[in-house]
Image 1 (tube, helix red, strand yellow):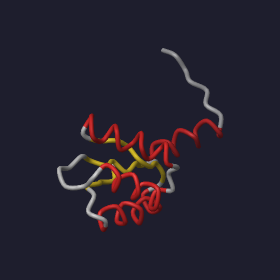
Image 2 (cartoon, helix red, strand yellow; image 1 turned 180 degrees about the vertical axis):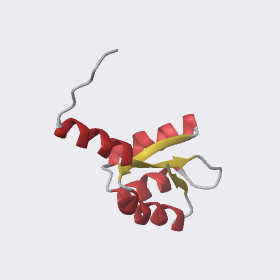
Image 3 (cartoon, rainbow, N blue to C red; image 1 turned 90 degrees about the horizontal axis):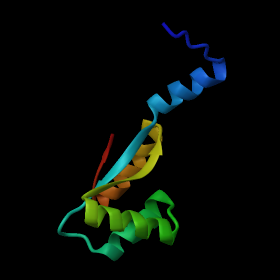
Image 4 (cartoon, rainbow, N blue to C red; image 1 turned 120 degrees about the horizontal axis):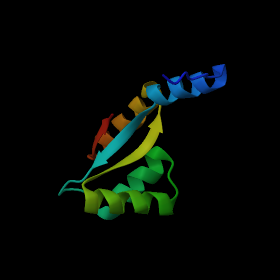
Length: 91
């Protein structure tokens, strides 16, 4: 059996990663590509290129993780996306 010797810092990083959540944005047939980009810039503080890449992935793959963080900080951002008519969930 292999024994793992973790430092306190490594354990804290692992716990933080386990607590980290993400906002997943889903494709829909209602919102335009430009509107999705604008929402990601306004709400998630993406730059234009990052927002465009996320919108492209949502369009072609059906979904994309657009923001990571703790649940409390993501809750407001996800609500903002939903208020603008986008389809998003925290996972």
